[in-house]
Amino acid sequence: MTRRTDGEPTGRSAASASDDWLAPVGVSAAAAVKAPAELLGEYLPLLADAAINGRRPDSFELDAVRELGRRAAAQGVGARRAVDLYLSAAWRLWRQLPVVVRSSDPEKVRRSAEAVLRVLDDAIGVLVDGHQSERREMIRREESLRAEFVDDLLRGDADVSRLVERAEPFGIDLGKPHHVALVAPRDADGAVDRAAIALERAVVDRFGDREVLVATKDGRVVVVVPGGGAPAFTLLSGGDVGAALQQELHRREIAGRWRVAAGRAFPGAYGVARSYEEALEALTFADRLGFDTDVVHARDLLVYRVLGRDQTAIVDLVRDVLTPLEQVRGGAEVLLETLREYFDAGEVATEAARRLHVSVRTVTYRLARVAQLTGYSVAQPDQRFALQTAVLGARLLEWPATPLPAEP
Image (cartoon, rainbow, N blue to C red; front, side, top):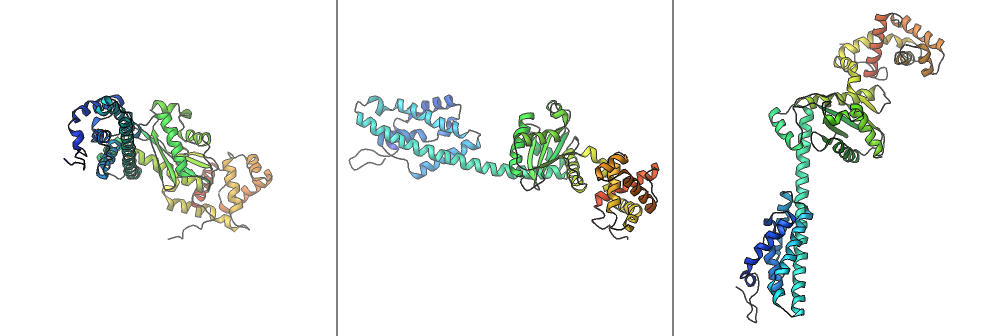
């Protein structure tokens, strides 16, 4: 025990003789705020020491309180509850302090109160600092684990059993079907991080915090939601996850223009990766084909997937069927555009003429010219199918703007 020059004891030793009465104070405070009493550590003896001896804590003692703040965060105790615990313990201790209960000297009580409040201020400050520090580290660790999990989940080549185990903390049951939707900016005004935050709130509001996952990857927002069997999904814009996400972007006034591509729902550990691949291809096709729509669905683009899977065959088809159009003055583009609009208009010449801003006679003349050059006529069903397939292939290959690969 250390002593002051006047012979009175100093430090923790002076309060230790009566430390037994501190335990019930801590237990009572912990029960009141529903927090572990162990998070108080040596905080109550510090307060008692301050009230009795007027001593402020040393730096190592405050470091111990800071560590308790980190422990609180790690145990899932919020900063507000941790602070409530310390405040609740402080007023309970004050009510039980012998120096307050027994003293009739107002000045002595004032000094004691001042000392307690100073220690309380110091302790709360380092407690919150420790809590925030631990939370920041936890968030960084969670973000790192989340990013790794999302990459492995979307890639689909990770160990299945391990992937299922890692999915559990995120609330994802990989045995159930899931949709993947991709949200991509269509102009420079689209802030992906802001859109991700807004869409995560929207998805959690609709589905809860289980079976959903929102992340960013390669400059896009990735949204994983339950498949059509989920009750909440049937209420989601008639089951259209793409339309629902687009509505949320508008409703929450997210700046910029966005395109949403939705893959079909598939079950199993590889189902998410398959749906993601479909959504990614749908975005690619929408860009290449010049779609103006803000929502695209993989199910509507399956024919393009079939064509795109065998590029050698589609190149041969475009070369054999459409390259004769390059013989006309100005190149193949005018006749190719006429074919595109004719097929998009349901093979109705008047509608195609309206879209092209030309006369019906011009459209029929151009179609006849196509038949003359290529040997394929839109009037013959089998030839019409070959022409339309070749036109689709040309859009995928971005021909004639992009030259076809050289023949082997």
